[in-house]
Image 1 (cartoon, rainbow, N blue to C red):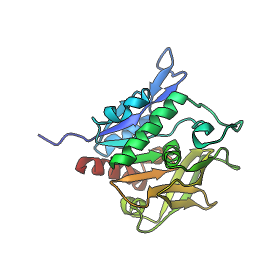
Image 2: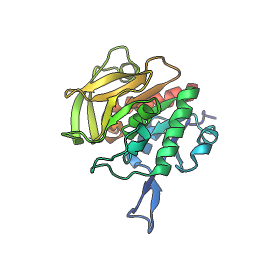
Image 3: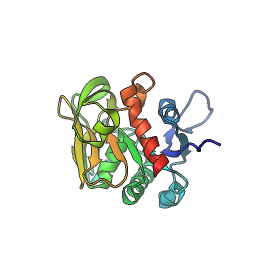
Image 4: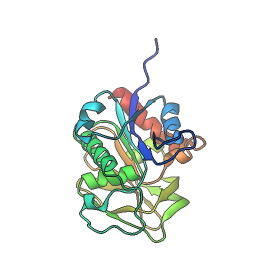
Length: 232
């Protein structure tokens, strides 16, 4: 009997409407789930409520994928006023994602954080965000330079990645223990990792799932997560 697929927990996202359902929904991006499945993992979609139970519920998983989504409330990183472009803020979603990130960081659970996920991890560790970039990185595909010797470099095997971006926020300062391991040409931090590794932990600001089906380099990011979850 073959080994079971490692279970990769993915906190779902609240959606006001979907074409297939009559009411508001709890969803994840198919491209994200497909990339995990293609890597040999089993996408496990978590209902993103009950932050106080996040650690207990994550015990069934072998790895964690913190996905993209709406903006974090600026209040969680110490800013009272929100820029007019801040959108889809949900306090329950924020609390769950932050709790999941804390659990992963404290336990060494294999974790990939994507776009909003990077921002969640950064805030958990005391970092700050730019509430709105000018120009923003929505509908942008650009090269990012990867630092040699980083986990990202080890996983992808390259020093330049074509990154598909959809974000209007980014890290302005990194949280304690995080270090930048990839940058865009304009200086935006595109990936970060804990300086002192405890398990497999990688955060990227772009959306590798957008092109993973046709770009082996971006698919390797998911392959690395699932491989780490399998051996954890």
